[in-house]
Image (cartoon, rainbow, N blue to C red):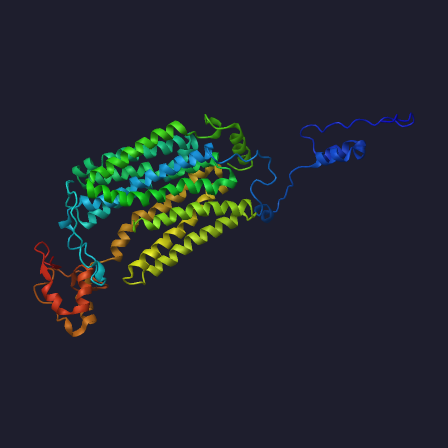
Amino acid sequence: MGAVPESTPPPRPAQPPQPGASAVGLQSSSPQSSQLPAGIMRSSVRGPVVNDGEDSTDSTPLLQGARQAEAAPACCSARYNLAMLAFFGFFVLYALRVNLSVALVDMVDSNTTLAENRTSKECADHSAPIKVLRNQTGKRYQWDAETQGWILGSFFYGYIITQIPGGYVASKIGGKLLLGFGILGTSVFTLFTPIAADLGVAALIVLRALEGLGEGVTFPAMHAMWSSWAPPLERSKLLSISYAGAQLGTVISLPLCGIICYYMNWTYVFYLFGIVGIFWFVLWMWLVSDTPETHKTISNNEKEYILSSLKNQNGFLSALPYFGCWLCMILSGQAADNLRAKWNVSTICVRRIFTLIGMIGPAVFLVAAGFIGCDYSLAVAFFTISTTLGGFCSSGFSINHLDIAPSYAGILLGITNTFATIAGMVGPVIAKSLTPDCICWDELRSEVSWKVPPMPSGSLPSSPRHCGTSLKPRLCRPLWSIALLRKRGIGDWQTSTCSTPASGLPRTCP
């Protein structure tokens, strides 16, 4: 370079900005700032744009403006390994929950509910029970329909208790131990189900409630773990993968339990799934850590990516519907994250859209299913579509806990899931009240007119019971036989009734 003239003082070298110094302070404190090279000036003022507008902030991806490491590959990563282990954990969890629904059919003496468990004559294709040759070595119990309802519903009496405490404990000790021991406890209690059944109905109800206690902590614990593991723009995918195991567990376990009961006996249903749950617990404790910092095999690249991305954040036919829901959860998770990351759709908009689809869609098809009569194919289609659309909720309100307050996601899920559990408790009672097996004789006469004479003497109960809103005698009969009477008239009535010695009420003869 040429020499600098003596009359011109040599330029002072530009000093790099000190850490923490703002661009404004740099410009105002030095009169030489206007002489700084353009490249230095531009680098000194570059930084995240602060925008206090609520709408504009919400319309951008969560990580815009934040310094973050390069996205770590998903293949063989610690976070996706966690998602897969959680997937199999919830698979086992729901298998342990629903196995009794199938096994109970084999546990109950068929003669106890023979008159009640017949399909309606309205639908001719299913008019007669099907008898098949199968293994029947398992012990049978004399449990009526009401007792079976109490047994099935007792699970949720324990499940509702540990929702909120589960979220709180997970925030204190971490989700790994809570989720692991929750599933372990449920698995161990499942192994003792045959013994509890032998001890009596009360023992089995208590055991199922204890299983519910163990399962009640699982979802809050998993949410608490994801608050430390899930990068914001991968939350939908990771949570959808992990929670989809619940639906697939239902899909696989329902027919599998039937096969086990058919070829072996019902006790093996509980032994098999209980052992699988214990095996999963060993893998979970060995391979999983509560946070990326404590994980033994996570790569530095992935750890930096997760931590930097979280830095700006606070905190057969019966199985077909569940298969659809499982598939929808996986696809909707991918779609939700793509909308937010690639299309810059706001988080709140994505959650609202997916929640609306996941709530209104199932409701429409459930209501429609009540008006299709005996079209079995259409019934299966409607229930499958309804349950499938419910999978959209996994990327809707189900993830809001992590969007709103990641540090308290476990507690928040415990609170919301507590109220959600009420449906499982009152569902069997409401279903029983909506499917009565009694009809008023006067109402029956009004329907078939002259075909039905006045109720014969000697067939009334000793004291009249309430029938509708008035005090009238009513005739307790299975719905299928009432439908038959409505179709064919009094002839079938005279040949298909008899008196039960215990109650004196006319009942259908086998």
